[in-house]
Amino acid sequence: MVERLGAALVGAACLLAAGRAGAQIRTQFEGWFDPRDPALLPDAFAPPSLPDLTHRGAWFNLESSVASIRPRAQEGGAIRSRAGVWLLRGEAETELIRRTWYAGLATEAAYGESFVKGEARGVVAGYPELWTRAVWASRAGLAYGGGVSVVLPVFKRTQGEAAGRIAEAVRVVRPWTFATYAENTITVRPYLDARVIDGPVTLQLRQAFDLQGLVAEVEVPRAGVVSLTTLFFGYRPWKPIGIGLELWEVYFLNASNIPDERRAVFAVSPALRYIGRRLQPAISAIVPFERPLFDRASSYWALRASIGLVLDEGAPFFGLAPP
Image (cartoon, rainbow, N blue to C red; front, side):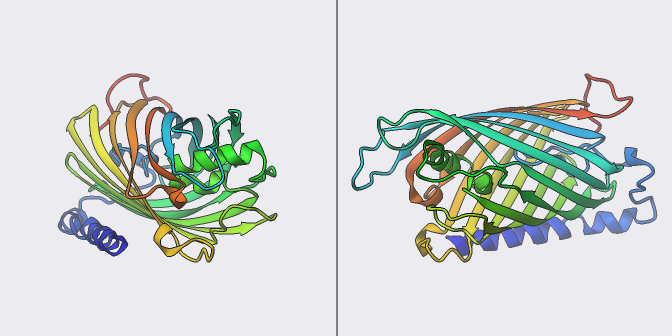
């Protein structure tokens, strides 16, 4: 399954580069992106988990998710029939150089319950993430670039504490943000981005690698190096409306204490977004494909709603984004 998905992702990446090659050649003398004139770039259909690669001004996003998890039966403990989780994530990203260089930060918190029946519910905070990235783009719709982010363990948490057991459930819901709730672990995440816009169709790819190191001993599996692949297909049947599908593969490359059959995790998310000049709210769902993270749960589902806001001097608060 991993090989098939990998081949599909490679094929999509090739299409991403080749699908617009002819258009790039035709437009090379018509004007490439000039960083002094950001109006040449279109506003794109942003995936539910990533910002528009070339957004104007500053991007703010507040996301709320509710999830229900069915834990897998374990020896020596009474397991809940279902565990509930509520997550809140806030992020902000701003231009450093107009529509070319960006910097951002994100933070999360969750309210949930552990998999063990009878244990108290509680709030658990995620580690903050900071990043910077650069992107090159043309008005023909092609954009590519890369960046690096850091997840900082600003406080200590152990698996034996109630917060650590709640974090175990939270990690299942969003496996691609595993590092945010990994106990006492610093994570450096380099990544590459690519995107093409062809009329109403958007195809976006991010390939990232989590390089993780412990700052204290933990009892959860040690990840080491994790491959994170995000693939997004978007379609705008009308200018203000976008429908899309986001797919993730999370693969633990060198975690010696994780069995081979549990290293790959897949999830999919159908999404619907309103694409305004400033306001860009979205709703989406998350469901696993095959097994959830570390096989700690047999299944789960999540619903999420987000409010995105683009702050750009001179732009009307209401109204549609440019095509």
